[in-house]
Amino acid sequence: MNKFKALVQLQVRSYGLNKLRHQSRGKFIGVLVGVVLLVMMAISYLLGIAFLLIGMGLASYVPSLMFFLSSAICLVITFMKGSRFLFGFNDFDILMSLPLTPRIIIAGKLLGLYLLNLLFSLLAIVPAMMLYCWHVQELVPLLGAVLLVPFVPLLPLLLGLVLTTVISLIASNFRYQQLVVVLLSLGAVIALLAGSFSLTGYDSAEMNQLLRSAMAQMERFYPLAEVINKGFSGQPLLLLLFIIISVVPMFLFIVILDRYYLSIHALLTVRVKKGHFKLETFRQRSVFSSLLMKELRLCFSSSLYVTNSVIGAILFLAAAISLPFAQGQLSAALPPGSSIEQYVSWLPYIPCLFLGITTTTSAAISMEGKNYWQYASLPIPVGKIYQAKLMVNLLLFFPPLWIGCTVLSIAFVPTAFSVFLLFLLPTCFCLFMCIASLKLNQLYPNFKWVNEQQVIKQSLPVLLTMLLGLVTTVLAAGSALLINNRVIAVLGTSIILLALSIVAWHSLQKRNAFVE
Image (cartoon, rainbow, N blue to C red; front, side, top):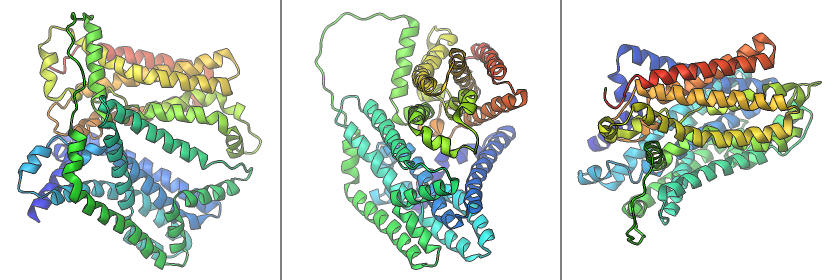
């Protein structure tokens, strides 16, 4: 039991809690404020959904929808962790050399991830269920929700681990394994988005009917939502069925995984060299080209790094391609008497919502890890190194951004100048976020990480990047409301973002993060 407890503590501390404990008071307060703001925004969003359902007379769907959203959040978290969470992690040899059985290692890692998902489930379900209980004037539903919350993350955790493991097993048969993992992971995300858009294949002018249709589609897509709905509507035995359905598959998964754990690990970590020796002359590249190729190899060496970094751009591209086919649904969702044309001037702000989620540069410096000494010893201006890291981000972000803007301009934008504004603001915003997040990583580098998740998902620069993207987008949209002139607002915001980008770039070149 002591071994298992120590392994779980190590797993939980890898989420950045141990590092946060030893930060300076200023950094600790900054991280705490950022986390509190993000939590408050997430809870406010979920409470807003619950208020909408109650206001439309659909309060009975609040429990099932909150459980569905919680499961979706847990699935995304588990999926983004990747197969390296259970297999192929860096300290595998160390753990296997200790007097630990595979079952203890599996249970310890699963419990660590389960606790993280449980925290998000509590935040997603409990506040909304408190609002629901206040509406129905009963306390029993809240008690039932609290009892069910520990079982909510089990099925999403199982599904996410199976998906990432299968993707990695498929990729292990190819030469460029990490690239295949990246493509399959992005394909899974796009397929999930396509499935979610297909659920909105209804057209009704009444918002109430739209919501009822959406809830019915959700129950068909996620049958457990119907079980939850009926369980809180007078059939409490169905809640017991939900617990059984959640626990039994996870138990079977642990038993099967315990038996084949080492075999699966070997399949995922084996490397097959296929090639022929050929004597050729050395190819010569410029310094910048060599740095760029090195940065691209570093970026694509980690499927988690790529998918976590470009997810915002992929989401925008998928949304932009889908919007022209959903004009009927958009028109039905608008207030009476308004049309899509009245909201076209707000299109330049839509890409900013997605591009501000994360960037490659928020972890580009820290990803060097123990190899940071290479850049510290090479006679290369640090500006060229930063240029290569910025270029990787722009090469990954600009193509989907411009393709998405092109689709939106063809479908919605009537004039050439409006098209120019649609491209201008997101491009300037993307450039600003790219440079600003690299500056944040320069201020808070971490070369001593053990697990790449520490710098890709849990580091302070990544959190600050998300917060900066959200705040910048809100300020830009708020200025447009105050000025009440979209053209002047877009042009002025773009100029300000370009000026801030130039200032941040000059500040970047004054410090070498690999030496200090």
